[in-house]
Length: 192
Ligand SMILES: O=C(O)CCC(=O)C(=O)O
Image 1: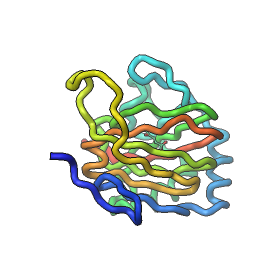
Image 2: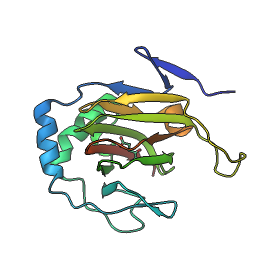
Image 3: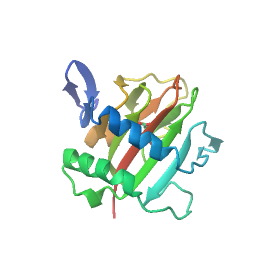
């Protein structure tokens, strides 16, 4: 049976996906981008390939290849707090944060977030992009070939999304190459 879907205004999204425009103000976007400008980014390998985006992990991260990660920096805490209120979890529950830096031409490939994580909350800075989603199937369990997206959502700059439930667990997502610099800030609850 195909996964259930939920309506979002006039956009069809998988159940459990929520989206809000203007989640942060222009001034907040400027302040966050300036602070991110001081962050040290690293390269990241996805399935053995060095990604074109760069990353900065904080808190209880399972993606840093065993390297210890610094605590979530103070400049991210008000945003974490606001997203936690929206997600209806304690701020402390968002124990992991990731900043992705997408320079022009950088995408993020199809993936489902690591199973150690629960809810994913993300904010987009500086540049819009499109997020594509499709039902997740175990790699190698279906014949090869191109699988198309079942959903496509415009993520405006200063917007936020929440991925929970079906959209988080039964779907994978991908962002095609961006045209201009984009940062995303994502927080994840961590399963103990
Ligand atoms: O840039 C985004 O909003 C998506 C980030 C993402 O999918 C990830 O970090 O796993």
